[in-house]
Length: 140
Ligand code: FES
Ligand code: FES
Image 1 (spheres, rainbow, N blue to C red):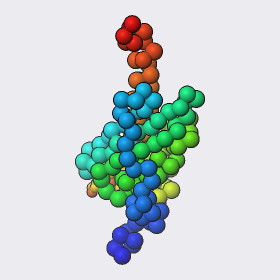
Image 2 (cartoon, rainbow, N blue to C red):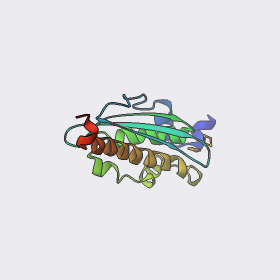
Image 3 (tube, rainbow, N blue to C red):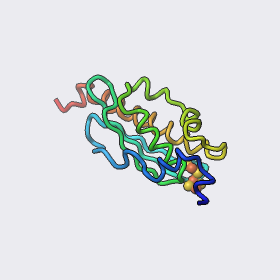
Image 4 (cartoon, protein in one colour):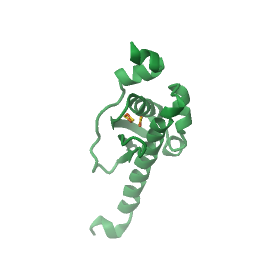
């Protein structure tokens, strides 16, 4: 098949059988949402994390409107960050994903989308938390 020749097997596996596709409730206080786009091609990725009381990512979901490499990168990212502390999850580089999935250079920006998405989800979660710990915003 054309696809099998053009892409590495691991990409195919994540593309044909993406892990953790779906959504988490955006307004849940334990959920962080990252929504990012790739200017190069217009693809969009949404990645959401649920964080437990120890700062560990207990659940991850994604939806990607984009190419096979972007879908594979986000699928890989969800498996990679589940069970990680936020500090460790935000250190994951797109180069690691690209290497793991053997993405060709023209597809590097697809893996960048996954790096941006997890960082953006963590930022959203932290922002929610800091707003909540501000007594003025608690509605007292
Ligand atoms: Fe991104 Fe085709 S260029 S999906
Ligand atoms: Fe743009 Fe893959 S995300 S071509």
